[in-house]
Length: 289
Image (tube, rainbow, N blue to C red; front, top):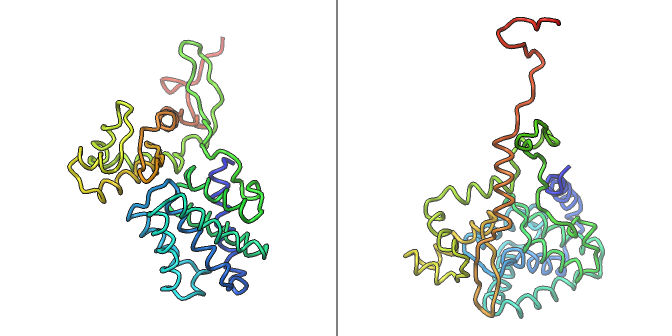
């Protein structure tokens, strides 16, 4: 089973475990660490776009385990961390990690904070590298080995099918599961389904690194709208983002795009499984020599 499929299964188990012990997760340390974790996941790539902010806030409000705390108190703490991350990402991150570290005293709460981070990160079907990285750092702050949650391994979906070698008459290994598009590929295609995002991505074709403001100016969009579209392209694996001081710069993720296109090619060209009742051509049985 691919790592992403295994992770999706484990997320369901994590949520069930959290729900089962929610009566034990009522301390202020768990509350504060969980909100710091959620804020770091929301801002993992160094940007805090409105859609991601709203998405995570909604997940917090509807999470069964976190409903044991006053909703307005959780929201305030979450927003306070985001404000600090917006003002100075580096300092805000240090503060959030310090808050997370306070849950280290109780092993059950420490594990629950990591589980909350993974559940929130996976909720949109795309637990990307930047989100995994902040959860790994949280593991370090809590003294938990990242390997315990499969966070030490790359999440890229392995290539499961290769087309036949041209002219060789032979096929490489074919696996039935290759005919089902993975979540990464579906998010990739969804990101490209918008004409606006297609035009935005064209500004990165020459290898340029651009900020949200530069993209907004070139595309004639408001900064908030441009930021939301760039976030979708990033989650879809088309863009990388890096922070330089208070600026976040985006660039095309050529390696990731190549891998996703290879997955798409394999999906489209995967051979159909032979039918058991296949008959020889022209409807008659083959003639024995």
